[in-house]
Length: 164
Image 1 (cartoon, one colour):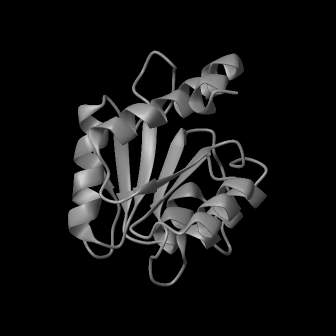
Image 2 (tube, rainbow, N blue to C red; image 1 turned 135 degrees about the vertical axis):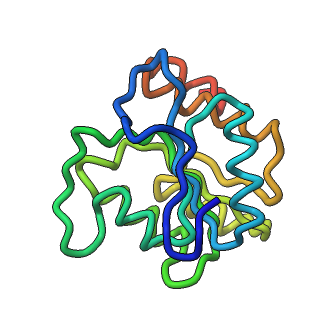
């Protein structure tokens, strides 16, 4: 579990990624209980998980924080799941920063919210989120997300995510 000022990881420091290995997911949520639930669901679905309690910590982990010069030769994150309403930097702001990065823009970003606001959902999907899920996350949500990770390996499989 992440402490109030650190990242938590469920895997070894070596983060090179081979598609035969477990996908690596960065889970961002300010609520420690929700973060732990998300982490457990992902681990049970054969994912490696790193957690962060806010957007700024996530950016720092990704090498995208202000003043950082990203070196992603060892960092492989296949998906970022972020709660929409987190203090300091919303999940939407995190999404925008990731999608602006030439080295990170292809990473699948999933927004999670407890609010079912159709216009917000539509806007976030149009702005680059791969999915918009409602809290609390369920095992079926994690199963649905795995298709976005497969899409990175084989783009034609990505059509299965939304029937495209």
